[in-house]
Image (cartoon, rainbow, N blue to C red; front, side, top):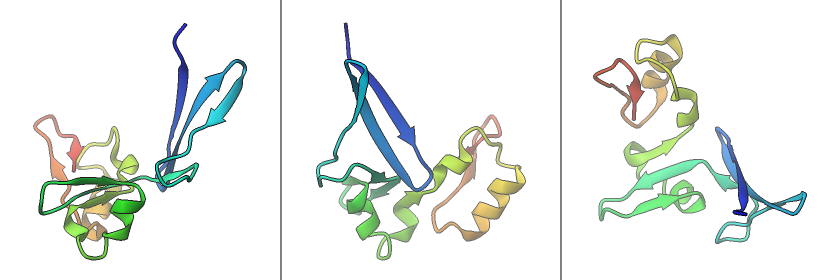
Length: 103
C-alpha cells in the first residue's frame, strides 16, 4: 500500500506529515523545521523560492513574493475580502476570465 500524506496548508505556515503505521510523523523541511512559511517568491533570474528563502527576500522583492494567498482560494475578484487585499498586498491580484481572484 502507498503512503498516506497529510498537508496542513496554513495562511502563515504549512506542515506535511506521513502516516507510519497508525502514527503520523511530521516531516522536516530542508532547513530542519517542522513548519514552512506559506510564502513563494519569484526572482529576477527566474528562480522560485519557497518557505524561509522566500521570506528572507520579501523586503527586497515584495511585488514578486506571494503570501497569505490561502485567503483568496475559492473567492471571486469582486469579493470584499479580495478587494481589501488588493489595497494592501504588494503583489498583483487580478480578475480571471471566470471572475475568480488570481495572483
